[in-house]
Length: 454
Ligand code: ATP
Image (cartoon, rainbow, N blue to C red; front, side, top):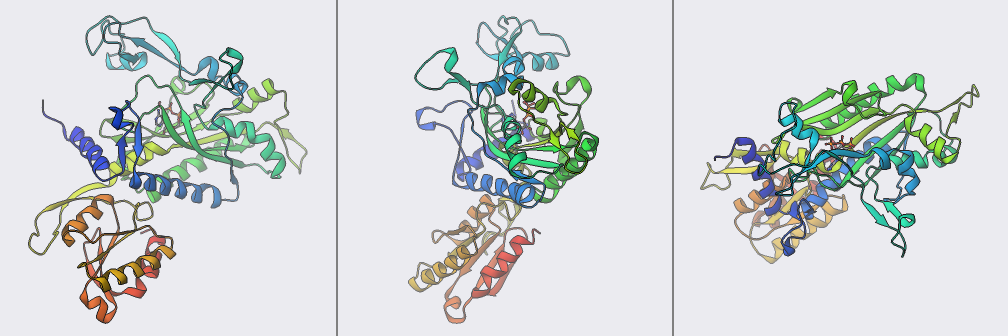
């Protein structure tokens, strides 16, 4: 069977990610461990750049949002109050023969609304539909009994709800007011896969935006615009690849009065990238009930006490990495050397501020004075906070190609004239234009271009 373009694209990405040090299969020296992935040097930097851009935009860049960091293992009471212990489960069926496990709702959908009678993989017999709790259970302390059991958090959101009271009291909060967190979440997903799209350990960037119930709808609209702007202006995902999907009443989470899924057209289908939900006062009400603490907010002007509504925009970091890589992976005909002007190249056209390496510096030859000059330039670039790479091996064409594949916006080549007149050649990843510039001007000029976000 031949591969479709979409499958081919996905395969190209997975192999580029591995070959160029973005993402590797996890525990590979032990034969791998299904659906776990290591972020390599470039992957981890790309991920950090996305995380930093998010924090800068939504926390440090705003007066109405603050950050917290709460534990992965919280009081098990949190998960009883939130409903996760009781309800955080998907209906699933197992194949008795091949032992594959499937989401019952997925099978229904694939089978036109009726439950299939046999395993789609091996035609074996399927079990009854069962509920399956997605939370990872663990033991705290030396005892291995139910009293000692706790859970790894399946979402970061509950940390903001439990911290709400302390933040409210410490920060002299006026509504609307958001609490943000970035961190790992764990779900014992039944069906994982599609590379880093669905894993059991992943990272979320979430905001719980506490708002007077009368202003919840406005806040929802505001966050929808913010999410759209993030997707368009920061990630620069093409407009046509993102769908803002209003979720109907029957399909929403039980606590939500309005939900919009932000969906990306991945090669394996249009799937959730982010979510935006109006969680009403569901969570605070529950936590108030179970903890016995007063979680209301008192308006200092009117004296009115209200239980805030919460608007929750949520961003999956790993799904962002995947969408960003897919959206910006490109192939074009580009000259890699004077001799060969027709060869094609793979290029990651990452937004410059997200690119793992900003500048690559090449001495044309392995000569000591050139190497010294290159290292000086590197120190100056690093002083501006830019991630730099040094490469002196292979032809210049090959060196460009490597940088194109990891999305480096600029390459600077130093040649013998550089020693004479202090100039060098800058080559632009996207336009392929080469410009002769004064070396000492390079750090400041590139730094400014980086922050103009063009
Ligand atoms: P899905 O329907 O795809 O399982 P969800 O609706 O359960 O997702 P949420 O509970 O809304 O997801 O989680 C918020 C965000 O966390 C998602 O929009 C997604 O970006 C990310 N996310 C959720 N589950 C996973 C996972 N297993 N792997 C990677 N990212 C995930």
